[in-house]
Length: 174
Image (cartoon, rainbow, N blue to C red; front, side):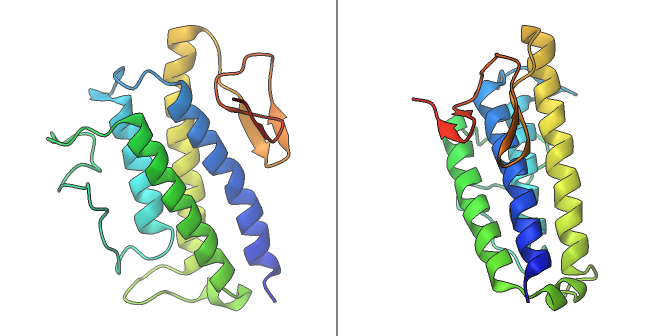
């Protein structure tokens, strides 16, 4: 039975939609705690990529350089928003495939070489993605006076008439 895994999958969808909207609406070069916002976006995506499944058995993405995931460290790589959104797509698909491969019982087990259960890893990433999405949206709100559209559930959008992202009421806006 995978009831809990399916609930998790349904609940992670809004997280991915929200960070996607953040990347589509933020000022990528605005500084937050001394680092450009795009670095914080990458930090959140990299963390989801690495920590959602198993941080102890992980291969870095091809464009990654040491320290790129830490906004406090200088890096020579500069990722475009298109690259960040492509990376988000791959993290999202990886996460959904992972959740589809689990049973509810497996959530209480630790993955290979890891001290945390799969459920702990999932919950940590829910918190982490939401924190950084809020941080990025706060930067957008300060700069524009408007808060980007927010998804609380995959089928429930908070939209005060201000559409920043490409998604509205479950439809892609072209």
